Image (tube, rainbow over all chains, first blue to last red; front, top):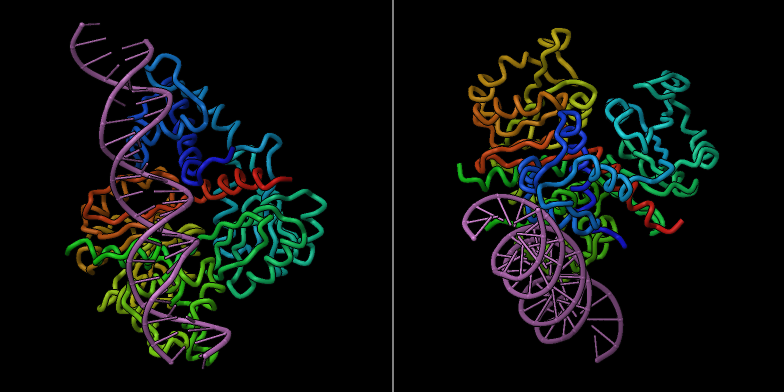
Length: 207
Length: 207
DNA sequence: TAGATTGTTAATCGATTAACAATC
DNA sequence: TAGATTGTTAATCGATTAACAATC
């Protein structure tokens, strides 16, 4: 069974809210409370939880701790997955620093760059290696996911290396659209498009 | 008439491809070529162009220059819009440096932080001001869009300031979900969710 | 019981794709 | 003409929302 993309995204966000709730000592949360904390409705929340087969014990809200565990069993890989970051400019450093320690089952284990000032140093808490060692590193260390934060013109060549080395998933932050085989899951985020989209819809908001 | 969100996103991306084509001296492009350069189909491309009312002159591909102009007339604001970045850590610097000069009709005119080491200096090509001057700056300089790249726990307070100061659109890069009035267009990008989503779908890809 | 909440099916909405006539 | 391409409607697919019975 595969969950809808949007449901997976929301589950990831619900989980963070739930962890927050737990820290505040809340043991239960209603669907309408959860909905209020995200941009969604109580029905949506209940439907998402229905899809993962979780139900409240006594219709008095969802058990925070239980729900965290259920979401974990659905979206986390039991043994954890290893991630690398390719390109340690400002964006690569931001991602690495931001992500490190956030998710126990998903860790950035190495970063790569071609700049000799970065290679062999620890940056944002993670060791940086030269790009030429990347393919070997991926196969030897069973890396599943790569985040590309390199200059756009290098993205195609890097992707080719990643695919050959057997990477399973790619998150592409460059503005270059990539093509990968079906065996690789690709997600792209394009900052420029995001901002242009806002500019378009801002126009439409009256004013 | 308002275009679908997804169409606006693709138009933004088509435009960049078209500008690239122009630089390479190509005068026309077929819908299937455009589709091949993005993750879409020729039908999708033609449908998007239908929605903006552009058609090829003689069924021999679209005129690159004309199409750039038409897309510009649809998604750009005629006078341009001003953007600020709030939070100049690694992510704020990455966004600012990456974006500056990319889109003539959309420019980052100031950045804000609370760190005295950053305030009053030019960072990533743009002057950084203290957060306490932000609201005044927004109203005095007719700022339309704010990008939030501050620590997550500050996001709610910053958003409140932005909304009060009359911002029109917000791009939120923090993991804190925000709530804004209907008069403000909000777009959120959550890196952690992106990576968790990849982790989930990587599992499903056999292996 | 009455009110609030949940779980689930059916209806709706939005976006993509199939089908095809028209044009070069 | 034949083949390729475009422009557009209708059908399909996926996701959200409405409706409502069941439960506490």
